[in-house]
Image (cartoon, rainbow, N blue to C red; front, top):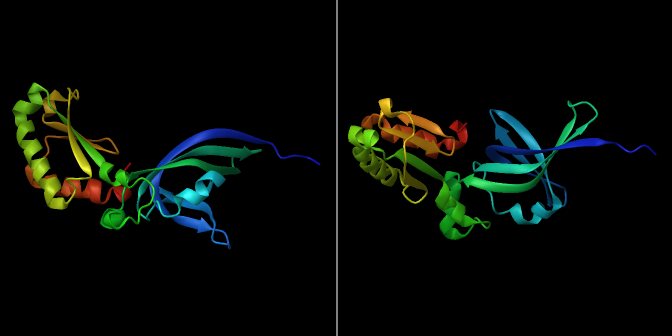
Length: 198
């Protein structure tokens, strides 16, 4: 009997979690991941199936690591997940975290993102201090003060465009942000990051 030979490569993907696909007996089989408006179905390793069920909510931004197996030509492949990490929570996850409905690592909800704010002299002199205060106020107004942290950094190498910051995850670089648009900028990146993150 001929055996089928696969070539295997490891992969790491980030995208929006859409939901699970279950077997008829209710056991989890695969997860659905949206990346750049395409949906991927990724089979779950047996070790993951029992632990993921209540840990993710639709809309969470996740990172999936695993193995990609190719059969013959590269057009036929299978994805299998060995590790799933939640990078940021959907609004539903954030709303539900007090009711313990997120079973795996609820502390991840507290690490939704970071704002890396340049603290070198050019940025500090050219509005960096005011920008820090504006960011703090806006995060509080949007209810993101517990899930998005502001970190001061060394030079971001864009001194002529000071002040500078980087929104994480996604590494969105922002220079000379207008205080009037900070609200929309943070709302778009963090409250809708599952749609806009790249």
